[in-house]
Length: 190
Ligand code: 5GP
Figure (cartoon, helix red, strand yellow):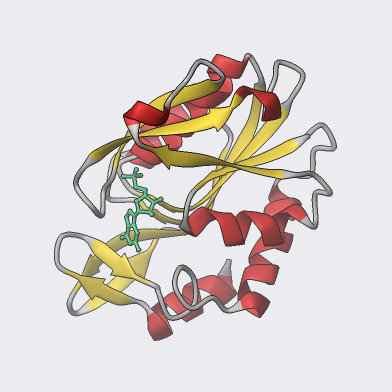
């Protein structure tokens, strides 16, 4: 998606440890016009009318998923990061290792909001090593629901998540795939 790539080149900041900061337009301050175009692009890439729910993970996926959901006319559900002591039997649960915070946490979703009849599109801001996406896929599987695909705003193609998820046969669409990034610059795939 050229608009997004141009914006990453203009305002993205490469940080040590393979972290790309896009907090001036995507996940801290949010450029709603841009995210609206992102929502339309997700719809164009996932035209299926079977989708019944959009699933994301708190916190930074939520705003993006909500704007995209207007083009799908379906509810957004988000996995919550939970304290283990709060977990009871009424939730689907998986573990996610945070790339940016280097710690593992449980994520939960109430069983009331996802069941075997659902067709789910997963949306998130970043794909790095794929832990967040794997955790969300695990939750969909626990529900017995169908995964229609996963839409990612920025995939870091030099990390393993993208190839791992594609090998599982999941229809993965990333709107910008970063091929390489250093202090001197950033290149995209395709
Ligand atoms: P993964 O689980 O694929 O390793 O990482 C995905 C999650 O980590 C995303 O939900 C995102 O919040 C965060 N993340 C991973 N890499 C980056 C990055 O380079 N920049 C930012 N801002 N967040 C990242």
